[in-house]
Image (cartoon, rainbow, N blue to C red; front, top):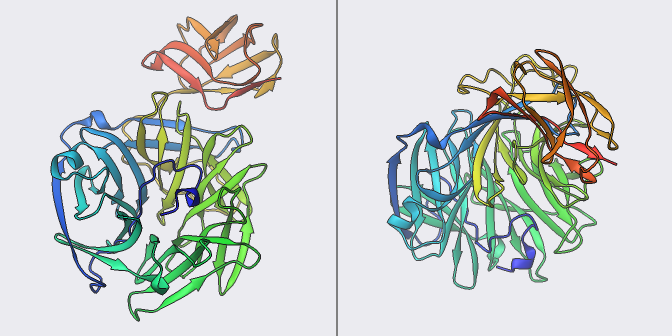
Length: 432
């Protein structure tokens, strides 16, 4: 595997492996160990709502963190219509059952199964179809291999066009997509049919690198393209042999990762300050995803209900998986249907909404909330205390402090109704 070929957002030099349940065994079988462990504590889940400065006010998501028991890191990459989540973990059960640096996992209603394809250095799961097929990657000596997990005791390989290095990234029905390294060390996408055993090359004209990352039941493929191994990248949709390239507005780089039956596309973008944010795209409309208080958010595959799987990094640098669900009752765009009820969310982290999202020191900002702000003791912009006045139980007027830093600032209100005593604004405040 050429580490320079990885997206700049994925800093792990771990190879990826294509895995699919219940498909015809391809290539030589590799022994696999799997272990199952039920999650017995509610402590691995937390919930919140978030909204970026790029989101329309009506577009809100609720977030559920996904953390495997005792794992040192968890990344979720996909969720299917049944709510099954796949991804990979470090530490935890992986360290107990194998000597690999990472193991794939399948989470069915909080019950985690970890999988290590043996004779390899790492295993990662990237997608799961609505009928339970799972795809992912493994690292091998000298590179990466695309493989299929048969469930239980077998992993088998994919070999697109005889490439020495390949990764499988998405699955829908009997079709698998991914990418391989060609003779010029560029990335080329592929589509594999488990029904016929045939491979189809996926390449967008005018770009040296094409990576196919997701596919829906209608055969529409998404991924990213670039003309440099280091980016910047742009997303694409591939349908009937035609590539349509797109980018998140004003983004420095855009990566598409998943697509559902409604042609909603999920992925992430990097802003001009170098921070990553998830997104969901429908037509020409984008909604940004930002896990509350995360230093970076990356969205991957989404299901037909619009639930998005991904991962975020906390302020300590630890990775956590998440599932983002659009809140019922809020509009997305005219004519677009709701994403459904968030029945699995036990509570939502309280937050405040800002009357404006930019200004200079001494600017007056209204902070409103549907949660009570009664008893508020402090308002702070990135830790800098602000003077404030409680106008009503649900409204506070604050003045941007003189010692606040220039740029994006988190806004915090200390009040009894907050999560652990604090409510955070659902957008940053840009000090000019």
